[in-house]
Length: 95
Image (cartoon, rainbow, N blue to C red; front, side, top):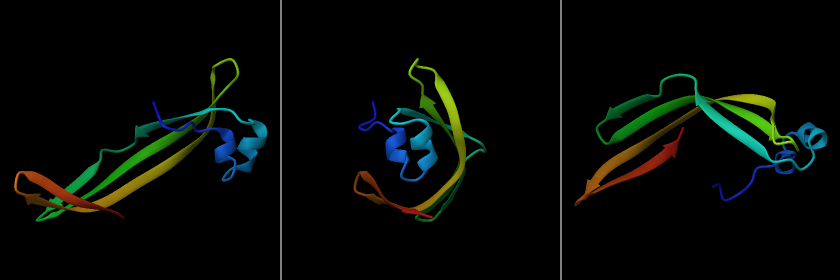
């Protein structure tokens, strides 16, 4: 279970119409990949990209989901990979 509950009031700061149309309703986010992830590995460096759609729903009083919007996303990052004794170490940087 997530340590917080996303609701229309908290997201209403970014999207005021959502808070107005669906006051204080819980939300569900579903993430689905739209392309195969791309990962490249070079000496001591790992780089990757993920493509996904973030589909947003509001939970209605009867428990059904009402579609609100889809956010197309691309997440990229790179990192340094190393070895220290018997451990793999690393540092990740968002692109």
